[in-house]
Image (cartoon, rainbow, N blue to C red; front, side, top):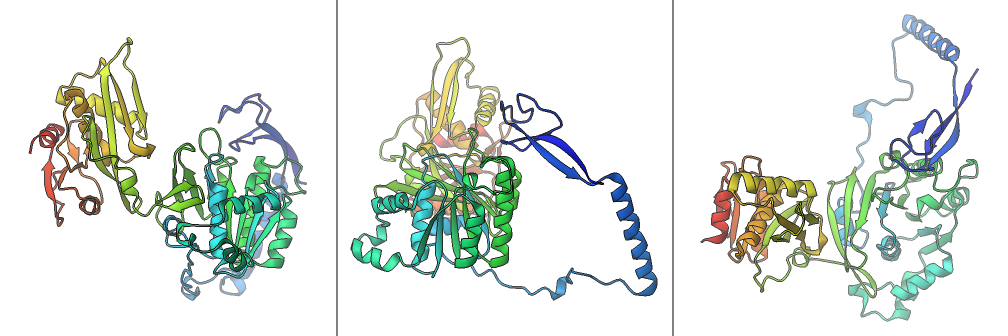
Length: 484
């Protein structure tokens, strides 16, 4: 006989508990545990099933040779090539690994108001110009609201502004279908009836299955709805783009298993008060992870930024002490970023350290190296470090630029113009090697830089048109940064 037992599941992180608590022990959220009934087979049923399986296997082995039942031989599997198609936006195609894969399941998360719905509505409009059936499913807005937002954006990109609005509406809207529904059963019927090439669902947290008793957005509803949609996408070869809400910590709301079910996970990042947005890939079964695409929010919607390095370089005509230029690699894309540092005497017993776009722990480590190995007294000084535009620079290749920017602010000096700094700072004061160095140097040459301070390594062969200065220690890099 099957046994029933009650468990309590956190609707934020999905942690299970045998009894109810006021606060989840995993994510520390109050009032998030919900009761759930789990049916498990009894131990006697498992033993009888295991003995029956062993007996049948012995009988089969004595009479015939083993053979596969439903599995396939590896060499007999047909090798179908990935037939990707373009979304209409090069930045989105780059993040997806070259284009949209048919039958894939893509999850897009981001803060409220960052532009997820705007991006997907524009993508639907682009795809409707090439594909016969595109379905946009909104569980948060009515069809009239979507029409109003599309009219406000005018569905116009930079390359379409020369087209008259009436002509654009007449030629682009016949292949785009809108459905405002929250019941997943109704959505599945429409998907099976229409058979669209691409379907967009905004958002997964507002859908519900009537067979489940929990509320929309709970762990069980989100997990089960995503599982059903995943099976439909693979069976009918429908590409699904799903919007997911995020928590206060910035992670996609719901259980972590949600990210394991989908093929690609994208995060739409940026300050809602700034104009640029960053679309970052954190999981991709069809391309490189940590790839980024840059967009800019203007009056007519989101447009692509073709040369993002110019966006994060700042004003190079005005030389200010405490600035340094680094080349950070996000996936396969090099980005030239300006780092700024400000060091000032503290007014408090313990000095302040503040970062924007830089990991706080990384700053603490670099400050310790500068004080111990270089001899710069920083224990009684406030230190503020930020990246231009607030771009998150997490890789260690920016360590040397942070160290030189802090040193320049302390000494009130300006780094030699047109100089970039690339290298990881070790705890012993060494400058360690970084990957993709030649790719970074080529990006610097493209933007007009003439000097580069890089790690000293025998593995590097520099075939670029700029002066390369290899250094082995931070002190050598400081001397090279301020003297030609």
